Structures are given as structure tokens and as C-alpha cells.
Amino acid sequence: MLKGLAGIALLIGAGAATWIGTEGHVAGRLRAAMQDAPDLRAETVAPLRDPRAWGMRIEGAEWGGPAGGIALDWAQVSVAPLDPFRVVLGLPGDATLTLAGRDIPLRMEAPAASVDFAPLRRMAPARIVAGTGAITSNDLPMLGDAQVSAELVQVDIAAPLNTLAAYDVDLAIEGLQPAALATLGALVPEDALDLVGTAQVWLDGTPGPLAQAAPRLTGLRTEGLALRMGQAEARLLGQVAADAQGRAAGQLAVYTADADAFLDQAAALGLIEGPARLLLGAGLRNIASGDVQTEFPEAQGDEIRLILGFEDGRTTIGGMPVGPAPILR
Image 1 (tube, rainbow, N blue to C red):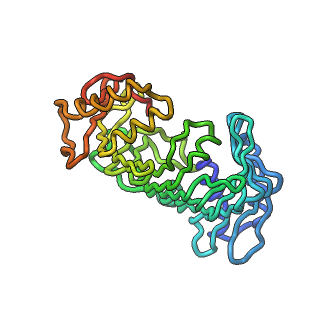
Image 2: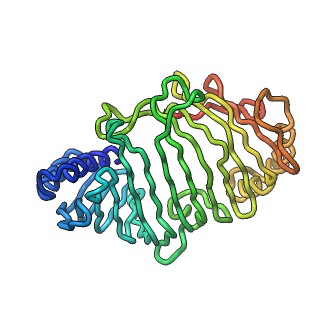
Image 3: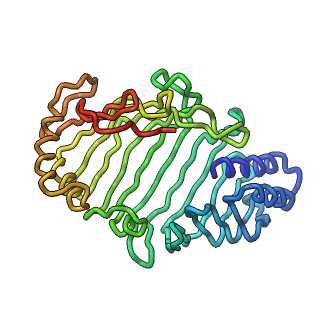
């Protein structure tokens, strides 16, 4: 979808910068381009005809495939004449999310998104900003707020050797309600969830409309990603990279003073049985105090530190094998 949006930006940016051709001509090209994108559909594509913003209005916009998608009454893609490489996406407050054949109505308080493209970097997205505000479904609270931004930065020495692009990502998902997870068919905790923090994402190519292929993930690093569930909180930091088989390699550290609260939630969800809950409570502390070679700082106060290791296709916790390493690409 990002590549499609970048392609739209390239068309609109070129037209706005030179002001050669009309919005109607570009709208026709966009309609033709959408015919070659089976995951993008629209009832009509029409020029804005607004001197303050050069762009398109798309009626009956849909994005998705058999597994699911999202439908909007309209979407507006525009640029200002004096800033032709910033694409602003205007969205309505209402949308319909389709999952597993079910239509889920959504109402977003403040949907907004924009992409700044870098003309000197083959029209790569230089900065992406998106947010929703509060989300409800049939007047039932689903999410307090979601904000995400990604900025193209210089690849540093810590990145994997095959990394060609890096993005600093700032994420804030707040007040994800249990009802929202139930609607999505996920396991339902007792308390709302927050996920807040920053990470750097590494890719083996620069995305954009001129890219020969979609870039693949080479790894990521976070110096602080916090998961909050009610009053319980855990912090994640570390770095992983994709190995030759595409599986994670590296180490992550989880710090929490609320291990018992997370175990209680897992037991309530049926992920672990009652007797195992007691054993895990003591076992986690033993694992956390185990001798694992790492550079992560020691836990402070009531916290415990769990080292997640990924090596040779395996995952370990505190040095104990627990299963295969996750696939990054």
C-alpha cells in the first residue's frame, strides 16, 4: 500500500511541481494504475479543483483482499502547490473493517496521515506520520489513541551489513480495550493495553515507487519499548537481526517488577494452568538470576531481567531453549 501511495505522490508531485497537465489527466492515470492493483479499489476518482490543494478525491475507497480489508466512504490525497513532495491523506471518521468475513464498523475521532517523499533518494518516504485519535465501534470504546511516525535516517554502524535504509519509529498505542481484542478474535486480557516507545527498523533496500522490489526487514533495535497492562508494566530493549535463514539472531532484555501480574493475566486467558502458574512464578526468578553472557544492565529494585536469546534458529530464555527463533523475513 505504501508503494501505491508513493506512486500517487510521484504523479501528484510531478504535476504540482511543473503544473503541466491537469488534475483530470492525473486522475485518469491514477484510475488506470488502480486497475493494476487488485488490493485497491474505488468507485470514482476525481480531481479536487481546489487552488489551495492539488490532488484527488476517491469515493468508495477499499483496500484489502480475501483475508480482510478496510472500506471508506471517501479518501482525499493532496499536496500544497508550494510543498509538492508532502502528500496529505484525508480520511472520514467512519470506516468498515472486514475480518474473516465480518464487517466491523469503526469511528475514528481524528484520523490523519501524511508522507514526505525525498526526491533525491528516489522518492523514498522520508517521514511518515499517522494517527487515529479515539476509536469506537457501535459506541463501544476500542482504543484511546494511536500515533505512529517513521523517519528515514542514516544507517549506523550497529545495523546489519546488508542494511541499506533505516527508519526511526515512534509508536504510541494507548488504551487498547479488551473489547477491541475480542472483536478482532484475539485473546482478551482483563485490562486495557498500552504499547509505547521507540525503535529503529532496518531494511535491505529503500522503499518507494522507483524501488525494484519491496525491501525486506534486516533487523531492528529498541532502547525502550514499554508494554502496560493495567498497573503492570514491562520494558523491552535490545537488538535482533535476520540471519541467513531469515530468523532472528541477537538478544532482547525484558525488565519488569510485575511478573506475577503478567502471569496472572496469562493464567486468566488460559495460556497456563493453575499449578504451572505457581511453578512459573518461582521459575522466572531463578531463570532471571541465571548466568547468561550479556551486556544489558542488571535489574534494579524489585525488577527482574529476562534475557531472550536468538541464535542458530533457536530461542532461549535465560539460557534455556524454549523453541524456534521467530522469522523476521
